[in-house]
Image (cartoon, rainbow, N blue to C red; front, side):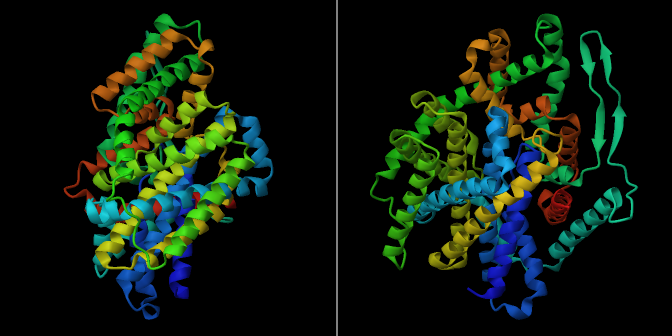
Length: 535
């Protein structure tokens, strides 16, 4: 492992972990960071071209290493932070001891991540060689790196990065220089007409939101807009007419809990069938372990994974039956996620985390910490398995030995597990979970689901049923209920930024041509936010 490749892979692993830690708590989407890392790898190796021998292969290795940290941080931001909302006393006790917080996050990340890599090792041959699944993100990264001689893409990335960096400095200032660009502009003041209330509308000058909205396009813009309009035209009027005996917060949380419950209902209708197919496929003869030059090393990997898993679950006092339940269903869910990611390039970790978490809540006497750890473990191992298989797909296309790509994926996991707790502690300590900067919508969604199931006797069932019906209607018309929740529940300034970016994507002929520029914008603003948190 060349020292320059090792250093770049380590840097990109830290970078992706830091960026996606912030993004996963700030907004309700977790885009794959691998294409952005590929663009950065192109620029880095152009600068250090004298120290590398095979540019394309080395760019692939550092990109694949770095991307593991991105999906791991996304899962932590989506699921682990749920503990803050369901049990703030325990979460704050973790935060009061930075070393303990970093230890818990790192131990969980390493254990679940290694289990995800183990799943990928087992299913790689079947999914990539036998079934020839596309794994679109892997193909996109491979094509990006294959065109690394394109100076145009590098320049566009640098323009986006430097322009956004300058914008942030002029907005926030630097050292003794005060910024002069306003942070936000109020477009409308709060107005009430009869039973309808139009909230105050503020446009934040937040480039990262525009970049994410542009990349995700109408997939995010439409449901967010539906959420905002539904709140103004339907949900608030129903509250005024029928539920004024409740506080607004009680009403909206219960209504949104109904929406979350509807997604869980849909998941429990559809997920068992797909999991049954996965379980049946696991025992087929064509599911073979990926070939390796050292079979004993594979056995050692497996032994290490089981040692870490049972050590971690022992530490948090899981029963033997609950450990077995989580282990078996995490494997099946990760395998099914890998199939979905191989076909469409997306990994819907949430519904599989829910599918394991909810039965575990009712079958075993789990406390809030254990419930959150189950969901987080499933999310991390499923996400890492998908990301690792994206990397293995690139390796197959570029004729890179599996053992070589594996080493860098393990490097990425170790680096990200080591730094994830540090980054999360700094971000949460500085910005505070639940604030506009770290709204953690996905975590709040899961908190509402857990609260609904644990405390169903104290809820207003009429509001809960209305929310459930609304969520089922959204699912029927193919509008994401969880993203609609963003429009309902998130501050409107964040929603507006994402919608503006999504609308902007409609006015260009080829959206992918603009990805390098917006990747630079996204990376620069994310880095600036992290610098602010640390300093």
